[in-house]
Structures are given as structure tokens and as C-alpha cells.
Length: 371
Image (cartoon, rainbow, N blue to C red):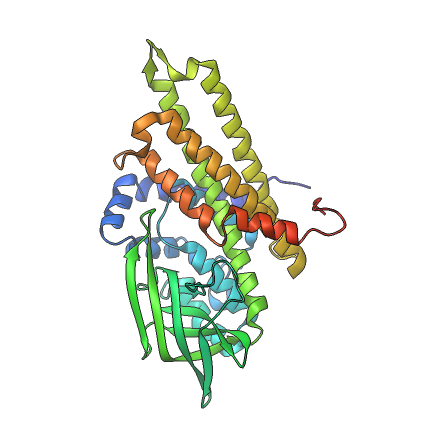
């Protein structure tokens, strides 16, 4: 299998990296965190690069690219720990493009591709943990449309988004519905998250909605798998930069008159961290390449990838802090922000233990050996 990137993919990587280096420095990120954790201007700049249209078909104004291009982009955004939730845009584009009726696609995909509309997934409920079928939100028919009643937690940029893809049950069957934030009956309470981004608690009180997918569980599983692949790629970018920052510190910080990088035990620890990074990278590739596979195969692959990313993120993040000493957890030092991002990503769409259980449950006669 050829793991080399095409010229177009490398050019895309280069364009995103240049934007991160030139336009999304640490101080701009700190300012965005202080302002609430979401910068619409930065999101619009991502749209100007065409990134909000990665998964959108050309007929709707998008770039019609695939999972590998998305992986390349998310890696670079991870290196800059960019706060704006492009992963959510990938989810919305993928679900709308793959499951929504034509009218809904035509109404929303062009706005998503242009950056005019930010649409995010609202599926997490307080008692649901990581179970996608655990849903207390209800949908009821109302004329030619639907009304949604319920509450969702930790919705990314929930008080800044223009619409939500909401999981809700009707007659005991899970469906996905699109609800605009400006609709009657929608209330949001925003807050900052631990790594500096923004989320919200969102309540729906008979809020007008449009049916996106009647077979909601299949669509929701696909949506979450897109999110996992994006989180894995973003995590690789964060790990890459964490290693870079740690190596730079060890090559400049002196102890007993010599740099830390000269101590053999610490060099061995860096080697172990590098091994975990490459394991994470290979599994991120695996996740992206399996994203369009049949559902059962895709779900197994994404659980395996998220498990390995969780292990790698915890190992590299914790060792980076230990190698830095006290400065590694100070707010003024950029390394602490990478550590916080790794901690947040490890919990996103299911923590490491959850995905270990998923891998175990999905083992077949091959005993988990990759197909």
C-alpha cells in the first residue's frame, strides 16, 4: 500500500501550515481563549482557504475531497491547537451529504462550504456516557415538520453555531434532525472548556426541526466515526508539536552544567515517546483509510485507532510534562496547552477504556487481528 501523499495533498498541508504559523500564533490563541474560546474571524479564514468545504460536493460549492485530505488538514490544525471546530464542519458535511434529503442538502451545504453557517453535532446527554443509542430527547410530528424537545450537553461551540444536528427519538426509533439555533424554543448556555475552546448546554422546547435521517443510529455512528478520525488526526498534530517543544527544551535546558538531552535515561524516554507517536500516526492513517468502509468494518477500525491514540496521547503528554518539570504545567508556557488539548482529545467520542471495550466486543474469529 502506498502511504505517500500526492502533490495536491502536500500543497494542501503546506497551505494550512503556513496559515497556522503566520496567522494563528500563541498570542492570538490566548486572546481567543480570553474572549470565550471561539473566534469567528479565524473560522472565516479557514473558510477562505476552502477548508469548510472539504467534504462538500462541487455542485454545492465545495472541494469534494476525502478522508485523507481531511486528515492532512486536521494534523496541521492540531499542531497549532486551533480552537475553531473544523472537525464539526466535517461531521456536518459528511452527514448532510450522505444522509439528508436533497432539499436539506441544497439549503445547507453551500452555506457550510462558504463558512456562512457553522453546523455542529448535538448528541451527548448527561446520562448517556458514550452510548450513541442512549437518548431521552424526543421528536414529534408537527404538520409537515417536526418538533424536538430535550437537552444536549457539551455541544461544541453550541452558543455560536448556526444550527445543530440533533439526535432524538420518535416512537422509540432514533433519528437525526436539523434545528436552527435561532428557532423558537432553543436556548443555549455557553462556557469555556478545559483546553480553551467553547461548548454549550443546549435545550430544545418543542423547537421546529427538519428530519435529516430516519435511520438515525446508522447516520449517528457514521458522524461519530468522522469525528473520531478527525480527532485522531488532530491528536497526531498535537503530539508532533509536543515532541518538538520537548526536544527543544531538552536541547536548551541545562542541569549540572550540561543540557538535558545529553542524559542517556532522558534520551531513552524521548525514544519511547517517538515510538508512541509513530504508532499513533499509523493508526490515524488506518482510521482515515477505513472511514468509507462498510459500517461494521469501519466501526471496528475507528475503535482500534481511538484506543491507540488514547494510549499515545496519555504517554507522550505525561512524559512531556515530567521532562519539563514545573514549567510544563504553567499557563504561560505553550507546552501546558498542548497537554490540556491531549487530555481533552483522549476523552472525546469515548475515552481509551471505552474503546478498548469496543475493540474487545467487536473481536471476531480473527481475535482482533487487523483484516
